[in-house]
Structure formats: C-alpha cells, structure tokens
Length: 140
Image (tube, rainbow, N blue to C red; front, side, top):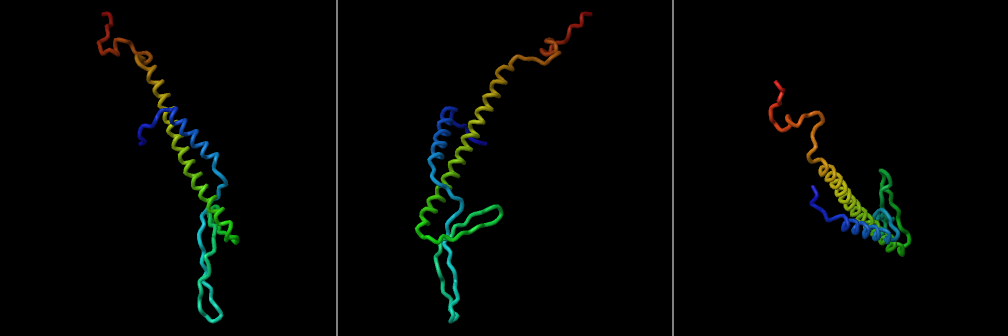
C-alpha cells in the first residue's frame, strides 16, 4: 500500500512539471550501444581480434536487431538519443505514479461524499421501533 500522498494542487503541479520536462526532451532512440569485437583468422592460421565496432542493438517484436554504425562521428549522437529515451521512460513512470495518486484522491473524495450523506438513513420498510430494539406494540 502506498503512503499517504500530498494534496491535489501539489500533485497537479508535479504533474505539470513532468509534462513540461517531457516536452523538452530531444530526439529519442530505443536500444543500447555496445562494442563488437571480431576474431579473424589470418592466412597463416593465427587469430587476431578486430574492433571495437560500435553496434546499436534493440528489440523489435520478439527479435533482437543489431546495426553496426559505420560513421564513428555518429556514436555520440546515438548515445545522446539513447540517454534521452532513458529519461523519457523515467518521466513517463513518474507521470503514471502521479496519475495514480491523483486518481486515488479522486476516488477517496467520491467515497467521502457518499458516506457523508449517508448518516441517519434507514432501510426501507423497517419501522422505527424495530430499529431501536424495543418490542413492538401490537395494540392488544
């Protein structure tokens, strides 16, 4: 169970801040950058390690798709875009949490309104004497 949260205006202000942060994010890209090394066999039979080659890897459906980046100047651009995606995910997670807290407050307000008007109401058809626990006067 979540601890009691702040009041509605504070949560709404936090939500607006997160939305503003979300709108300020630059280009985003899914995946991660890794370095690929290849072991190559020479004509004389010896093996040599080649690389590192920058490799962009991401999931596409159930498959992992990799793309080698041929221009080393693009590596910092890809890193920045991937970092922006991580920030996007963090901000969206925060928006979901704030949205749930706001929803909890709205539900609590509705429940409070229902119970506040329900005091002193009785069941339909029950006589006041039976509700108070006194025996019924039948008039005999």
